[in-house]
Structures are given as C-alpha cells and as structure tokens.
Length: 450
Image (tube, rainbow, N blue to C red; front, side, top):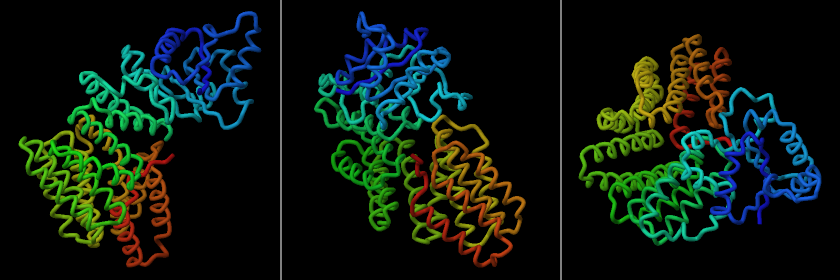
C-alpha cells in the first residue's frame, strides 16, 4: 500500500472533494490522508498531521494562490521534508505555474500535474484517466477497465492517447510518463480492444519511445506491432517508418532502408489519395535523412524535393516541409555552398513565419532551432561572423527553457566554433561542419533532458 498526504487550502476543497470521490475507484492501492475526512477524533491536529506526514510515501500538494498563502500548507511542506529522505513530491497544479520561481510554495523545483484545463472544463474523464499515472508501475484497481465490453475500450484508448500527449507536453517525470505507457500497453493487450483503437494506441506508445529517444525500445515495440498489424495498411506503414527511424539511429542503415521500402509498399496500397500522399511525403523525408547519413547527397536532395511535393498541400505538415528545406541547406553546406544554403533557409523561415496548424506548432520550434543553427554555420562559412552571431542568439532564444539536451550541447559548440574562428583555417572549419551535420543525421536529434 502506497501512502500519500494531500496538502491543500480549504478554499480548494471542491477539487479535494472530487479527488476523494475518484481515488477509491481508480487507485485503491493508494491510501491518501485528507485531514477533514481522516483526522482522528480526540488527537491534536498538529500531532496527527505530523504523524501522517512521517508515514507518507508521497506528498501531493494542491498548488494554488490560496495554498501559497496558507501557513498550514507551509508547515506541512516543512514537516514532510524533515522526514525520511528520498520521498516523492508531486504537485497538483490548480493554476498555471508561472512567475513564482522564487517562492517555494509553488514547488518550482518539482514538475507537477496540470489540472487547470480539466478543472475548468469539468472533464471527469481526463481526471480519471490521469490518476493512475500518479502510481508508477501500478495498474488501476478495477480490472474491468482492462477487460472492457467492446464499447468502453475505444473511449479508453482515445482518453489514454490524449493523456499521453498531455503528460509529454507538461514534461512530467519519467516514472509518471512510463506509468501511463504501461496502462496503454495493458489496454492494447486486453481482449476487448478492436484493431483500429489498438493500432492507434500502439502508434501513441511508439511516439512515446521516439520522444524519449529510446531507439531500441522503439525497434522492439514497432517490430511486434508491425507483425500484428495485418488489417490496416496505414498503421503498418507508420510502424515501418518508426522501424526505419530506430534502425537509422542505431546505425543499421541497410535495415533502415528495407523498412522504408516496406513502408512505401504499404503507402502505395492506401485507397485515400490524401492519406497516400501524406505517407509518401513522410517516407521521402526520412529517406532523405538516411541518405545524408550515408553521404548520398544527390539522393538526399531528390528525396527532400519529392517530400515537399507531397506534403506542401497539408497545413499540418508545413513545419516538416520547412525541415526539408533546412536539411537541403545542410547538404549545401556539405558541398561548401553557403549562398545556396542561405536561400534554402530563407524558404524555411518563410514557412515557419506563416500560419501553422496546431500539430505543426508543436514541431515548429524544433525546426526553427535547426534552421537557426544551420544559418549560423552558413554565415560562418561565408565569413559573415556578425550574422553568424545573430543566428546563434536566435538559436539560444528558441531552445531557452526546452528539454533538448543535444541542442544545449550544439549551442555551446557553435559558440566555441565561431568564437575561435580567427585561429581555424577555413578547410578545418569546413570539415568540422561536415562532421557535425552527418553526426546529426545519424542520431541524437530531439533528445530529451531528464
């Protein structure tokens, strides 16, 4: 039994009441102390709170302006920290976290769970689906949730896909994110989930491994999923694309090419022209990156050109189209043609500066960071150090506050390279650039900081 202590202001008791009603239903193996419900009669409140805090395995503070102003909440926080070391604190944020980094009452050093939108919209389903994520490695107490009657399962799959997107957007700790994925895998393996929801949820799990940069896990999961996907060409196409990405990152380029070929065969069988066009554009984009890793530059150019032809009609793919221009600019840098690279980057910036769909806005900052980094290198090779420094500054602004460890490293490398330009012969600088571009195509891009 995992013991939790809920710290809250009584001004937030509506949220606490909802939590108290739902916890026994979805998390029976979590025993949470709530003072106005569980305080022992006849025992001094302060002594009872101190004892319960000493016994707790996790502190669940409800973070709000009322809680931040509460002397009791501050005392509970202090007592918990004085107790056994190594225990978790998981803030439940009832208002957005912003502008409070200097106040420990807002738990700035802890990544919490954002309930703001779900409380506002009164969406019990989101609330209900997220609660099991508070219990790393544990399944919900009610087994009927993983043996649905055939009508409940698709709704559960859709809810879990939304929750997986939400926890990644809020950059929750790895144990919370992994717990949600375990729930998704358990539902995929249940008997009550049909092929459509199963494949959709399976692709969401694959997306989790992509986000984590866990290429071995992505390969294993996508291999099993692709083998089980005999009734959905679109899903099989996407799983083989994931396999190609994983194999490229793991340095198995021949295998990556084979999976791209399989993905292309599935894509060409799709009956909907728009779906087929989008899939072929995505495959060409990955094929271009594989070609760069193999130093097949003209093949890469051709793949990126084909990808743009396929994808430019989709608003949701505009950021990916911009990415192909950035990649083409990198090929121009490999060919020592800074002027051509800058023209490609201008095309990318025009796309990124226009209207982007919500899906593209999520991916857009990463593409913008790569564009700024590539522009810095282009100006550097062209001898315009002032413009190179401006691009480095732009890169730093884009990556500020984002969990991209590799971008932090590359920002430092760019700064060093340009700062020491006076002592590097042009040929050595060119070789350093080529080495960096090819290494980026082989792996490391999109790595998360944890």
